[in-house]
Image (cartoon, rainbow, N blue to C red; front, side, top):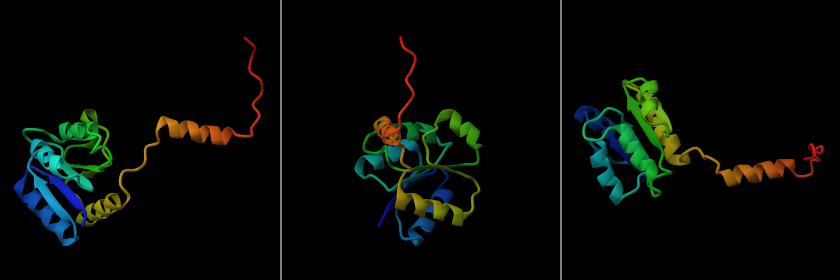
Length: 149
């Protein structure tokens, strides 16, 4: 059973999300802010983090930065949910995998959670992989001589 970490300061929203995800077969841990979420993340790495943006103590952007800075958590998909516009969120933190505008469609959220829990983060190629791909593409292609120096 895949673990989803729900980080939401509004008790009612947190409870509803937990019930919905558990009904879909996920194991759920819940935290009311980023600091509480980090304590849970220290004990177990989830398949997905579903986080509110505006929270007390440690907001979603600060949580996202801490998650991406930790090599053990760097590949965990991170989804923001907020009534705040995505433009405001992107000013604070950009390395998330999806954004849900509150209120959001439950079926859309569940489909997103399923996809990210199954596929993980979209692969970001390393510079080594990009170089290898370019060399493979250029293999066998003769380039015209450059200007002499």
